[in-house]
Image 1 (spheres, rainbow, N blue to C red):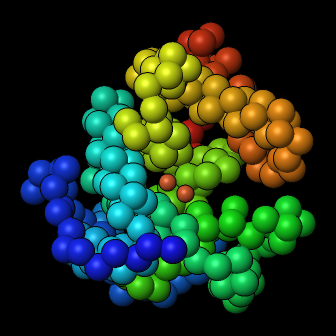
Image 2: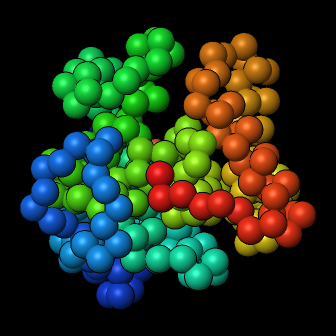
Length: 243
Ligand SMILES: [Fe+2]
Ligand SMILES: [Fe+2]
């Protein structure tokens, strides 16, 4: 695995992205209450330096694109783009952790594991990424941590911020320029729930086609997104959660 130690160009985003984060709390990622005003400045360069030591350059570039895509999507939907930027920057911290380490960190933090997590520990990189964000960078904002945890499998009742980061990971420009992806990018501007629904269904279709296991959380996310999409089409105001 290539772990470059080049100096990092902070730059696909402007200075406005050197933003809030960090606090002193060591609370569990599972139990942190919503703290809307607790966002404190993140030392973005410190995160970039850590990433440059722990992920390949290709992944670092993906992270920067997810950060930028999440910011744009959050701004488009009038959501908290500062939290979107932080979650985007931090979402793949544990991407290159070995399976044994992912399982150890998840168990040590009291995460409830599905049998599929044990079979495919890589799926835990999202949950473990939130643990690293908390322990390595002092992140304690509940919504940011949840968006990191939810970026791969989603979660029923996840917040709109989580939807934004989940979608940014799937559709950042480096993912390609196919018709399907471009449709998803358009859909993400029209309706976040429909875009989450589409992403889950595409992912499940691809897993079925390759006869791979499907994590139950993807189905739970899909069923939730379907209901939310139907509510929003009917014009009902969807009930939102900060999960
Ligand atoms: Fe990821
Ligand atoms: Fe990612």
